[in-house]
Structures are given as structure tokens and as C-alpha cells.
Length: 208
Ligand SMILES: Cc1cc(-c2n[nH]c(CCNC(=O)c3cc(-c4ccc(F)cc4)cc(O)c3O)n2)ccn1
Ligand SMILES: [Mg+2]
Image (cartoon, rainbow, N blue to C red):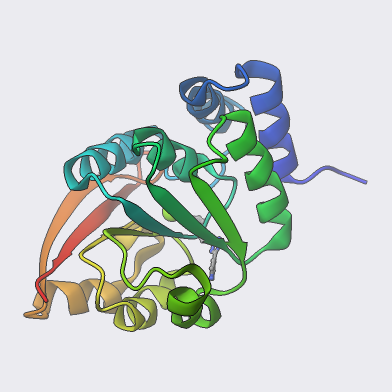
């Protein structure tokens, strides 16, 4: 039967990237998605914004919601010190299977803990399951209608960075973080990965 898009993306990584070289993995995925087959990775343009926010926050603990094929997982992990922890949640088991192999090809498995399940179920269990009561940085890149309810579940974290706030969009989340006295929000205008369509990242610092 026909392969899936994540399987074809992984094949491109294994063919074109050097094992243990995370930058070559990122480059191979971006080239595949730009020139062969679009996929919903944060991409190179928004990826540079992601990199700058991660470097600025310099987090010891990161939570990523929505692993997909592990592209942003690899980008974030590469910027973390060896003792830092990145927990990434993926709902779709077929995506998780591919993401684990992409993360391994990039040599980042030490810093990354991929957990399968839905954010609504897993976030409340974070404390007891992983002993992490709050995260220094949360990257929201999962179902867009879960951004707001999940942000409310996590009102102890310090920096939220949300992908796709314009396309596909998360209007209720955007309205909340931009108008709530609990957050200072900033919009980084960009484009939907590998396209000319407007999209952007919203960085929201929790004021406690
Ligand atoms: C733990 C947990 C995890 C999840 C979860 N895991 N993986 C995801 C994927 C979510 N991502 C997207 O849907 C997405 C879509 C587009 C897009 C698509 C089609 C278009 F035409 C235009 C844009 C672009 C993007 O950048 C996206 O990130 N959710 C869900 C629940 N709980
Ligand atoms: Mg996204």
C-alpha cells in the first residue's frame, strides 16, 4: 500500500541527512517539504524565530505540544544544554513512530522524551508522571482549538510560544493572551511553512 507523508519525509532524512548531525536533518526536511512534498513542520522561516526565542529563554525544561515528525523537536533540542529536558506530546501514533526515528537520526534522543496521548489528558498528569510542575518554555503546535484550554491548564509556565496563530489560526487563544493581564504578548509575523501565506508565532510571557 502507498506510503504515508511522514514515512516519505523520514526516507528523505535517512537518504539526505548525516546521522548525528541535527542541522543536516533540519535542512533535509526543509528541502523535502519545499521542493517535493509540503508537510506541516514549523519550517525554516518560523524555525529561525523559534530558535531565537529558545536561545533567549535558555530553558532547562521545555514542553512541546504536537511533535508531528519531530522537526521542531530537533531544532529546540539542538539548542538545549545536555542536562536540559524536552518533553514532547504527540496524539497520532503513526506520527510518533516517525518522530522517534527523526529525533534518533539527529542524535537528540538523550534530551527528548516523546509521550503519546492527547494534551488534555497528559498535561494534568505532568506533575506526578514527570516531576515537572512548570516548564520554562511551552511550544504550542498542536490542535489549534486546544491552545486556549491547554494554556489555562498550564498557568504556571513562564513563556508560551504558539505556532499558526494566523493560519490555520487560533483566534480565541490570541484574544486571551493579548488581553489578559497575566500575559505580555508579542507577535512575530512570518509565513505558513514553505508558502507565501501569512502566519506567525505569538510569544506570551506569563506574569504570574
Ligand atoms: C498531545 C497532542 C498533540 C496533538 C497534535 N499532534 N500533532 C498535531 C498536529 C497539529 N498541527 C497542525 O494541525 C498544523 C496544521 C497546519 C496546516 C494544515 C493545513 C493547511 F492548509 C494549513 C496549515 C500547519 C501547522 O503548522 C500545524 O501545526 N496535533 C493534538 C492533541 N494533543
Ligand atoms: Mg504548526
